[in-house]
Image 1: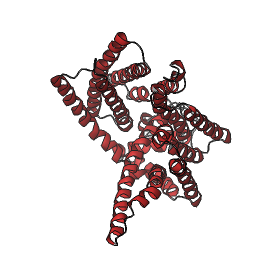
Image 2 (image 1 turned 90 degrees about the horizontal axis):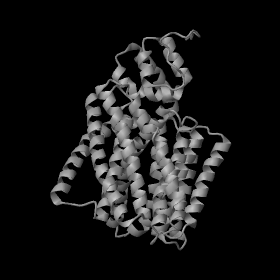
Image 3 (image 1 turned 45 degrees about the vertical axis):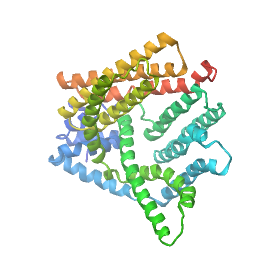
Image 4 (image 1 turned 90 degrees about the vertical axis):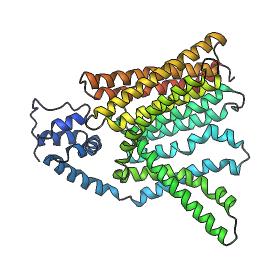
Length: 431
């Protein structure tokens, strides 16, 4: 196909490919080809999301056949990739099995090192798949090494709030290292960040399926040996379960990379089901809290659970936005997301007022400092998302603003996690 070098008036800028760009160029084959050549990987991701809504368009059918041929070529997993996956599973399993071989405090070990059972292996896999440079790979490994040495040199978290908080927030820091390995040099691209968030939805769904399958197989294995009067539960769990658990996300990731259609329609469906259900849960929960007279201002444990709930809601909002804003806007879904964000903002305001009250009454502590920071971050993020949803619904603003409100704010969480992990323990002298 010959591509003209003349820039037509309807040609989209090339700096960041958007779904709207593909939709606008469906009737202009040359410009559509140009968009593909400028960013093939992002084009394929966006087109897969758009295709159900444009499948009647002859141009879309042609492109679907073309891109499907590319997917089929990529579907075969090479023997080299199988070998890399096996090595990563073995290395992750060794990290998980260390407390079984060395006299270590197992709860404390996993509090500090659970993240190293999963993220380094997945990061190495994507670094290899994305053809990262040797320097980038070594810098990534150095980041994991520094984090592992640092967290294990900290005193035991028993009785130390700052060390416990560092253990909780360090995985967030390393999640950004993993994210860089996943998107490569396109971390500043909104679509790449959203694709990274969507990957987590697909990973969760496929990992859950593999986990259930593994649980069924384990039950059958133990049951069959029971029939011949052999009790193998302890042996089985001691020697196989940890290896299987660390293998699940690696195998799931490999399947997602080579067979993206496996869960392509499942994650958006879960997002559409979860959003109204979580909204209903928040309404019922809020009414129950008022009826029972629970007091987050004076009940410390209730306030902590309240904040865990808010973090969960924020994660669901991010997941739902990432899954539902890549295709044509669904007004009902945007309304539900706006209501969910607004309800979460109201609850976040209560939690923020409660933690400010406790700080005013009893002063700053590591936990109160972190809870205050988390509430401020969530309040800011939810406000941005709600504003963009409102504009998209009532002012016909482009949905790109919703995507930007999710993707650009991620860096703020990373900076905060770095502060809690590496600076806060020294401010409070590891108390």
